[in-house]
Length: 429
Ligand SMILES: Cc1ncc(COP(=O)(O)O)c(C=O)c1O
Image (spheres, helix red, strand yellow):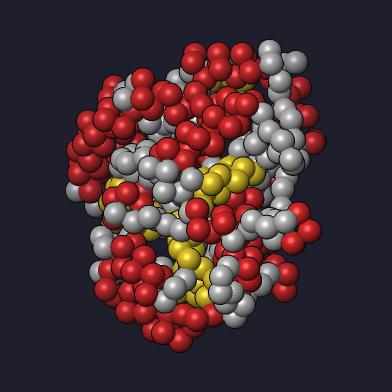
């Protein structure tokens, strides 16, 4: 099919996510290689948002490609209801290992939102059937501007009105704490009001839900140091479960395998998605402590099982990608390779920070963002796109979250383009 035909069909049939279709300008990707994606016209772009925070080792990594192809020769999918694929067993073991087996039980689902749904249901059901049960613990505490997904349970704990306000009548009530943001205060500034909420509601809370270190969808709000640990302490003090949503920040994005590690925090429930398959296939996982899992055990007719599942939970092809992804972290020493890239990115950001009109330059690992004058963020993204860098356009800020596999030279190309775009956007104001 010609590009023109594809664009016409795209406009006619494909309703895109989070996109105002009345203004949608068709962009169709034909292939990818490493950090590059290429559209049907043959234009190449650095995938600076990692295909919405999913891709880790680059597109078409030979080892992940081979693992999926090899799995295809055995079986593409079998159900997780009462059985499961051998490769999914290995994926579960690999994920549990990443937590030092402190979260040894792994429930698979299909995407980040469903990993959150599962976490909420597990937390709710746990308190109904743990010993002794605490049936009053039915509420959730979540943070302002939090983003945990778009299905109705996940949307209930979201705090971004633009996405969820319309659906309020369909959502359950949540106790809402402040968004921790190091542009606006210290850890104590946010923990103090949270301590008050815990004091008022602690014994009715099933769990508190948090995006560790960075609330990406909130405009890359970065938490002050010590916030996450303080929240863990409050949850422990009030006997509440801590759900860490590492769907966006997990798998090395912040410089460590999991963001929680940087604050020495072990959550009770950990939600993983996006990078779990290195950005290849839809899969998510909810990992829990043994003591939580045990509360679900009993005779078949006890009603204690977790009655939740998705047709493609624990899909075999996706599990093969998980196993290959985790192997690559070892073979390519992905995490230790990151420190030079993180420093390199910091150097570029320091230059950008000196420009007039640029504020709040911030970074955690390979996640970086800065605020711009109103509207300049969109201009910067437009310039970048016409110069071979794909950024997700945002009116008032710019962020980069490239695949972990990006080289220093590619990082130079990416950041030079953004730096030039900043200069042009500022002179045009
Ligand atoms: C922190 C966080 N949680 C959950 C989700 C939802 O994941 P998904 O889009 O795979 O449903 C996202 C997606 O961006 C996210 O950033």
